[in-house]
Figure 1: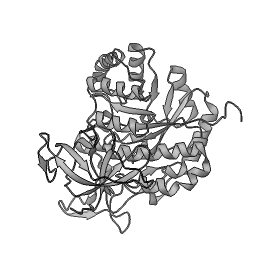
Figure 2 (figure 1 turned 60 degrees about the vertical axis):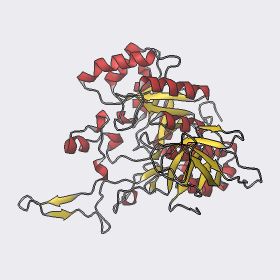
Figure 3 (figure 1 turned 180 degrees about the vertical axis):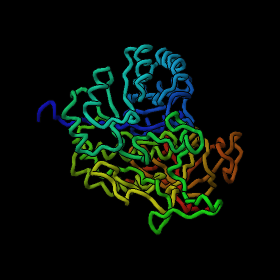
Figure 4 (figure 1 turned 45 degrees about the horizontal axis):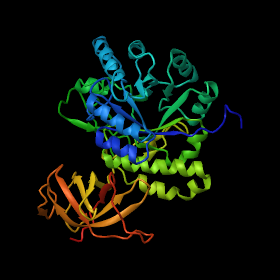
Length: 433
């Protein structure tokens, strides 16, 4: 195998909407995390990071050997450019650690970044519609390190791009998450219907709405739009999932496997990051081990919030089966309860957490471990912040202390909770209390 064609070890790139989610991504297997600031990113409805939170998140990630990329991928207007100069200067001067790269789509924003922060590593966003190797070479010659492939590319097209670009240039490709009905995310529907511009980070996702037709002379009389007999969600794409195809992604020469979802919860991020981490590592260790554990990956990935799955454009143009016609709702089999923030108590078995959904004494929960273990446990006791016993945790974001009944794992060892473990419960909840 020549150096040019030597197999590459791909990065696992995970989204984060908040410090909590960033920490989850880091602990559950990310090689890199991408985040948005309070401006210039394409997820204006995400919580996003203040500069102070960004600095804290970068410090945490770097302490665990994980890189952080900051999105600045709007299609900028004249009024955005002066603010972008200030913003890039703030990122450049961030202490104690700077972001590892910027994700940019607009040539004007690229020019501003290079002017203000010449040495910064720049990745070209999928919003730039990167569909051929000459586009990759164009950005390479301007100083970009990495280009994110358009979602409309097949694996064969990506393999051809890899053959035509320098080995040290990086390809990043989405492998999991929501698909946009418009070409590489360049959608005008939101702006037309609501005045909120998808390309300025304010998409209202009208592709998920249900539509009807109204004839001009019959105002108020609506006729349903049927793509087939099951419904009228004519723009509603299935979610991308490539967990079955890690070998093809690696062998295509993709450097970074990217998960979509900068508006998702810590439970989503933990589930997806852990599953893809295990799948990638298993494949790199042994293709046979990866194939033997495929059912496990499929079972785990289905536990996170998702629509029905598709492989997108990777194996050719999607057909009608890539759409969901009868509903725009998610499949959501598990509920996120919280994360172990600290372990306290004289016996080291009192778990401090911030509750995200209601649970009660006696409920059976599941502990998600970063290494892939799922441990069923029962809640033995709950205490509020003043250590008063309570029967349940009904208030959102309530600070709690939790004690679990002692539980043995499959190997016979006593189960222990560690900081950053995730707690979840399946639906319908299994409760014996």
